[in-house]
Amino acid sequence: MKKINKVKIKINGKNFVIKPKMTLKEVITKYKISEKKVAIELNEKIVNKEKIRKIKVKNLDKIEIVHFIGGG
Image 1 (cartoon, rainbow, N blue to C red):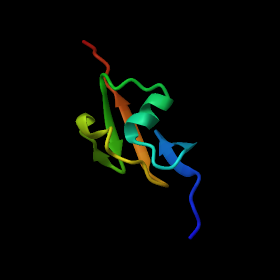
Image 2: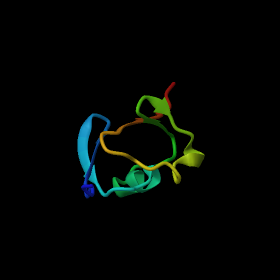
Image 3: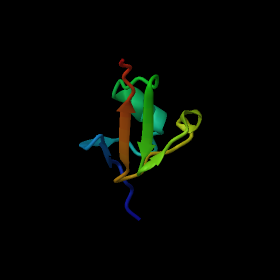
């Protein structure tokens, strides 16, 4: 069995390569994305921020991060 040493993902439509077995929290931290005032979607499902430390990102996962902006 071949060992995977690269994981290809998309964040907001852009391609990235990360290490295998990274958590969603590690990915967000690596790319300097603040967890505050954002919604995180993984493969078209909204993620509970309390669980991002446990969720392992897999090859070809799609992550969408939406920033909340106040206005009036």
